[in-house]
Image 1: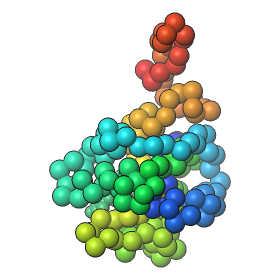
Image 2: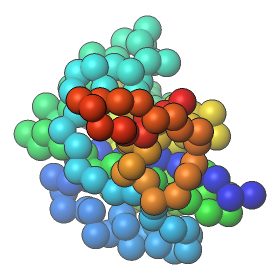
Image 3: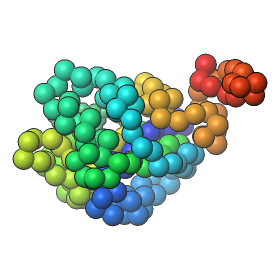
Image 4: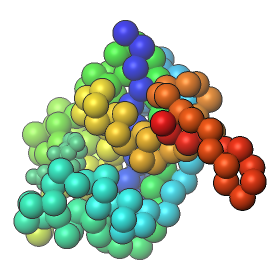
Length: 167
Ligand code: UDP
Ligand code: MG
């Protein structure tokens, strides 16, 4: 079944000049890129994205990490991949969350590390399931930034101009 997944190239991936390598690996999936941009991650976006991990001891470090404070790269690359079994194909290529447990040929296995404080710097984010993908894509992208219709939208007036927002 066709589905979408959010991919983030995290600040360590950008700092290590891995953008090209990661996109090349992802192209093995033959999925279609339907949205892409560079994002400066606000604290609010970071905390909303990782809301399910709020109670974890590593949460403050995780927020600093995704905001680029640990790598002096205050940006991430956000993409939406779309196609047959997009989530499982991209999660498979990304590898396990813990880079030491990830297959060595996976993106995280090849390029990830565990910091001395115990945080997994694992280079990429991939939505874990369709529910997460929907929540995350709607959080990171506006309807007009995605070239296919993924989720229901509605039109609202903003400064007297009609704009599409998520319904
Ligand atoms: N993370 C960590 N330690 C853990 C679990 C997660 O540092 O024990 C970090 C890691 O960067 C991971 C992110 O928190 O990618 C989000 O965790 P999640 O469990 O959602 O894993 P993912 O979906 O990214 O594989
Ligand atoms: Mg996750």
